Length: 355
Image 1 (cartoon, helix red, strand yellow):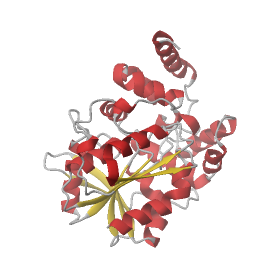
Image 2 (cartoon, helix red, strand yellow):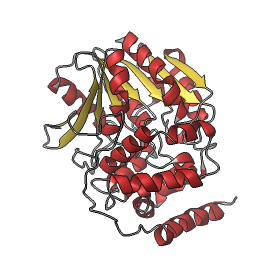
Image 3 (cartoon, rainbow, N blue to C red):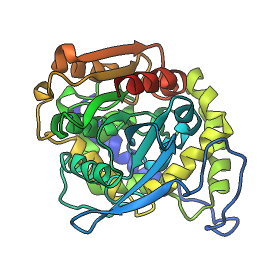
Image 4 (cartoon, one colour):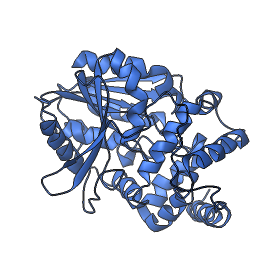
């Protein structure tokens, strides 16, 4: 397919979304709060906000054991702190303290218009001081499906985890685990689903405004609908998608998982789509550091799936090659979603062991 044809396909997709994906009028109050059955905590009892030295707010949530081994969780794209609620029971069992943050402009965090990837580790340092943490690990997971099936979001915490590895002090950061995380932009998106390939090859780079329009037309961003209305529509979309991988379908048929993802998407788009677009733009630029220069004594665990079409396996292979002997690459017979569902216990155990 020629470059012109690829661009035409991308723009037609946006136009189709804009003209054909208009939501029906809400069937009830948009701000109604249902109390559905869900095995994950959906409330804000675990959430708080820290005022940073420059006056910005940093939203964060804590899950698992409050006295356990501290692990900062970096959410996906789109994503929010609340996606880490899926760790609550497992983290208690493994004595882990999961601290998930909202990136700027997401959830409870203030926007930060001129930021770089390397600014977020500085925010984490401030949070670590506030929580009186001397040592901690960093985790990037795939615990988000803001967009269902093969049009899922991406593990956008990957570049931020690498930024943490490159800049946080050795006496504090003891280990990093990246699960299906996006790598440096020069790796490319060959092998990704068409939506992610187009988005990261063209959309975020050259058409950020159009990409923002596209994002706002998705079900995840329709915050005028109640979560119950969005839940029913998401279930219908899952049923209509005949191309979904069976491993993903099993996950998408779980009611608690869907409700948590919808809760997270509400946080992700609560301030609009600008922060999501900004996130994508930063991931398409030079990272501001070289992966090869990350300190050699830092243990880095890489978990990637053979059937992942959100973040191609090649990202894990290339990150491992650039890190050299300090990286442990695990390739699993999983998708972008199923690797977390089936490997999360192993991932957390390894992190806790390092701490």
